[in-house]
Length: 617
Figure 1 (cartoon, rainbow, N blue to C red):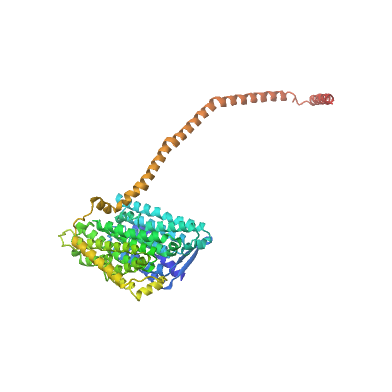
Figure 2: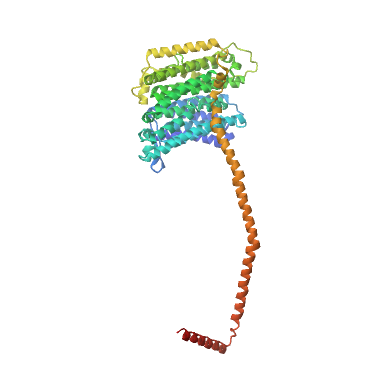
């Protein structure tokens, strides 16, 4: 059983590293190798989801490396590998032969493998390993076209923002060790909730901050806007089923910890609700399709975070799986249009769906699912998690419903532009047929996954997740959410491209992602840079001058020593040497070599000695 789990994580990791090491020589074979590895990983993930294997290996004394697959991690492993396979299938057709394919496909496999490590980790150290590799490979994928300074700057922004939040996991690990109870048990994810105060609060705070940062929740959401600079397939994988949902998965996994802290569940639930509403408004204000999809990712993941805080594990998991299918499809379609039409600006995409009907139809299915319209998967999944929110607080349910209404608005807005009457596009490129098939598969998933939100499949999901006592939505909740979504979508479609009757300052604030990046620069980056400049000035004007002054004083002391002290010492040494030579000459005079003289000297010496002894007595 353990061999199955080791193979699941080692296969994509090893293949990814191999492609990166071989480099451009493997460009021709890279797509085929990546697809074969992804297909094998999907098969292993499905098997692991049914068998629930666990694996253990020596790591540190008293702290082994542990991986395990249970209901939640099994569903996530299947979702990650399935979306990876579809995205790589699209990439194999869409990525030109002139690109560094081995580097791209190697990074994608390495990224997927690190996500699988994160999903199957049973202890904090193993989770940190996957978490860190995932962050590093996301930086490399966002900055894949590294010759463009804007793309590398965007990759740096995304990496540094998430890296700052990732420090929370180190805080959590340190607090877990300090709480005692044995290294093995204290660092187990299942054992975090058993820590005593104040360590329990430190662990909770660290996990929450790391999860919110990785999932681009408030106040870290702005990094996802920058991440759109990467290739569209990378965006489809990173921002649908892997990196940005890793934080939501961690919160769903550590639900008992949030509940035990007494405050973590409320903070997480309301942060998710606020992100769903505010980033929904940000999405409505966007005129760039990928920026709209990025903001909607933050908002949709906000529902998963809300579910984690409200204890609606089943609803959050269903939302995660359904969102993975819909959002990966939307990003891939946006990438196909960008390649074919050379733009991702909504006003320039007028009629794009009419030019490429199959792509447009698949995009429409995913957008309607994102809007929460029946009978598509996100409509039902959202109601399952909102039932948990309603049980906790009517106000939390109302906030979630407001976020769902905004989902319909920004989804309808995107559809309005791409389905407007077509305009002449003589320079439009052909979308490869091989890139269309994966979109159709994902569109089918958007429809088929709705069955998971209704009995008897919903009961099966509860059993798989071991989530007993989960609240189920009433019929009126399904009707209410569907009705509001239909009304909001119809209003957005009828409004079209007319400017919203909103103050210009508010409109620019939402279009600029609430000014979060500027706030981060003002509150964190600028003070850090000022401190760095002050430290550099102190180094140049104080420390450097002090070192130069010390060196100058040492040189002057050396010269004075050479001129004065050394001359005196030299003279003293000369006097001692002269005296020693004189004594040597006096000592050589009695040394004549004649025996009678030595006898006379001895008699004289003994005589003097005898006189001294007599006088002393």
